[in-house]
Image (cartoon, rainbow, N blue to C red):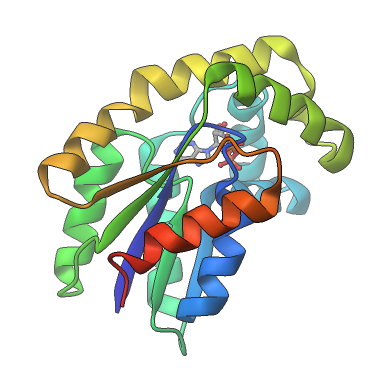
Length: 193
Ligand code: ADP
């Protein structure tokens, strides 16, 4: 089994481009944000607690997302690997992921990083707010907090994976989705099997 990570700031296009990679390499696309939004929609206790944090632009606790991911690893069949989107997002999550995978005799096979500027993050998210209607996309304060959270807690993962030779970055700032997708797929071809 292969384990790939989609990495990048909010609004970089992780979910959008994950679809093309998933199809091409027969992977299961796992987005922790989507899994959390499904819990919110279902009105579970977990969803209720997560919503309060998500709407402020904060991260939900590491154990919560790690449990969701591990249970998907256990239950999903018929794929050649997983494409993680929005996970890991903290150093602790990255270290715990390494342990979860070690128990499965596996490892992270590559990190696909989509890079855009903070300015473009703001533009993309305000555009998305009108289309997808996500509460955490609608408030400027929440968006600013998510950008801060990204720099403080998630950006250190670049060094973590670079040291292991697993970090692959593409600048995903083209105006069209198609152009960005072409860049992403070309990057993935350089290391994925
Ligand atoms: P985006 O990439 O636009 O921020 P996501 O759907 O990946 O959107 O995440 C939405 C929110 O869900 C995050 O702002 C955070 O509150 C929560 N979340 C998603 N993934 C994680 C994670 N790995 N750890 C903690 N919180 C997460």
